[in-house]
Image (cartoon, rainbow, N blue to C red; front, side, top):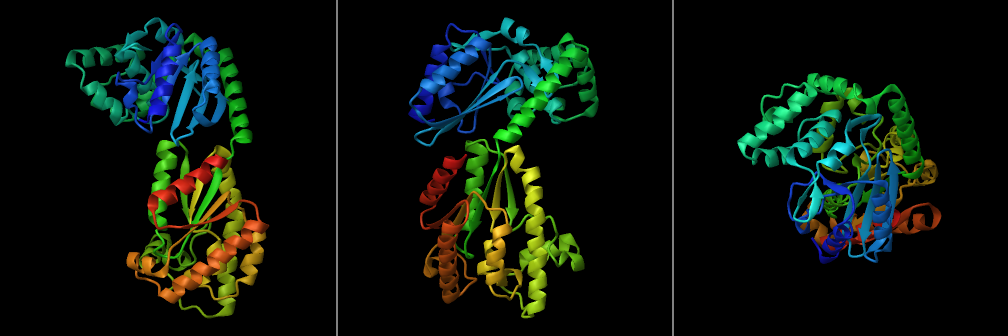
Length: 432
């Protein structure tokens, strides 16, 4: 952890020394050793929530602070000036949709202090994380299973016994809690529904609050589309993999990867060979090996894929963007303009270029390139003349589109991976 991030965390808890809070999902490790992908989940009162908000807004460590209120929780997304990221979740209620699953009073009343940090005992940690996972359709995660399995056997038995007695479940041992079982879900849900916190009136209030929160999230937090283009050997796949790790791990973003197009419609060969076999043949075939020279066939083929873009962009918006996902395209529509041969299309670029006016405009478009000699060292699939020709066409297209269309069209000479990644992340953080 960097000095800046550690400084913020240490001073945050110093400011809360006399306040009522409970650090959740914490296993007693030194907070200075918090992993890059870890969040801070803190149970707070309304007053402490406001105090933490002031503390965050008064800090000079951040380049950007995002705040999102949802039923039972306030999310803070903290972007440090040095490139670090931290998500802080302030809970005032343990709730999934309209169902309260743990008493805040019980957690506050049984809080303990470890290394100067207020948290809860192991049995409540177990109850919290297991209930949370079960209600979300999974068992106890491997991280927590490992933690609890290292406790003395007597303590493990006591924790499990308390849970079974309270929720009328029949977990035989710690390992059995890692397996999702619908019977346990039903038993636990029945118990939770019997609590006064989940009376008809309270659940109705919670349901209304949940739906309002979902509506607000849809209106306020739209996702983003990022595309990556490049000739084979430009290092595109490596960069995409690293970007996925950064977005999903470090920056806690929901990410989905799509190859070339929305794929609402199957590839054309799937109508002949079936989806699985067609996709296998597509992967095995080298790029730009299609032999189609028929103009009519090319226009029909392009039209089929263009329909996929038109219909697919509505599907992508509804399924991902309104839910805050970052959609990453490994290649995009630009290939039809610059390199139709990749899709076995032989036609002028004029029509595909014009029809781009009606295709969804991504927020960020990156064209990765390198000189022909460097690319051939990485992947010997294209001739130097073809690499140079395609590169120049892409550069010209991105320059043209940056003047005419929404979104950014950015070309990056991909010679140093870290510089490329940092450039991409810097652009992403400006729109995130």
